[in-house]
Image (cartoon, rainbow over all chains, first blue to last red; front, side):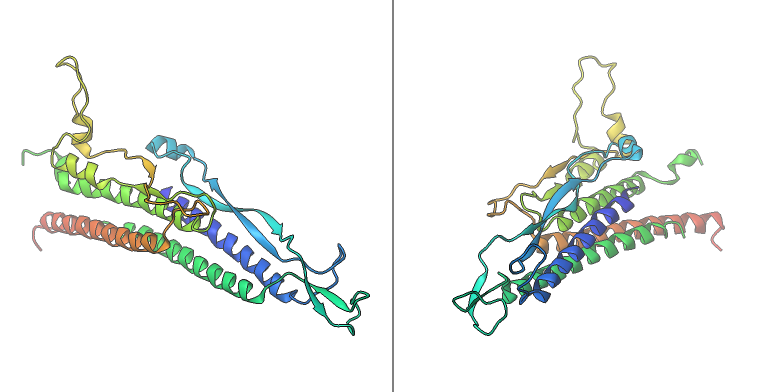
Length: 145
Length: 141
């Protein structure tokens, strides 16, 4: 049914933005991490969004409303930023190299915060869309009451 | 009464009913736009049915069917129940930003609200009509 299709679209975006929020939190949490499993400092990560067609059900063909333009959003990958690590002079640090420099993650706290705000706003927009669709469906149930 | 029962709902009610399903469809389209507000390369979609519905409800020839014989079907189908099939189209834009995404979140949210309000208006209008019928059925009591 069409109501549930728009709710499915909105909820796909909700989970995508939530995943993005998790990744951003990981970046912030690891802003000072110098040791990782792969060796070297932590590298900041970011999500890659992709529009994925909603797909059609039998009812869509019956209504003549089938098409491939409507899209959910999908996280296709988590991209690792290959930017150079920050080099900070701190000879007392256990991970300092021979010259006394420590390689810190390429995480910019400001950038991460700004991205977090963007993710929150996008989440809110989609939550609003979901609610409005729900209200439309509830209103339709009132027909003839 | 000479009118058949099916005419309890008159033409404007059926236009209203038709508007309901088109508004629901538009809410899908806007949901898709909002969901993909940050997807690179996504083009904002639009769904315009008002003009077509208006033409149909005014008895205009919105979707003229070409006929080569007077025995061919005329526009009867679209005229009878206001059943039109507009396409979901990529909304034209003046410029395409760097990331190829043409969604303007403010426009989308505004359109969503507008769509919802008009949907409620249609429901309300149908309810009034049904209320009048009920009033008539109960003999004005």
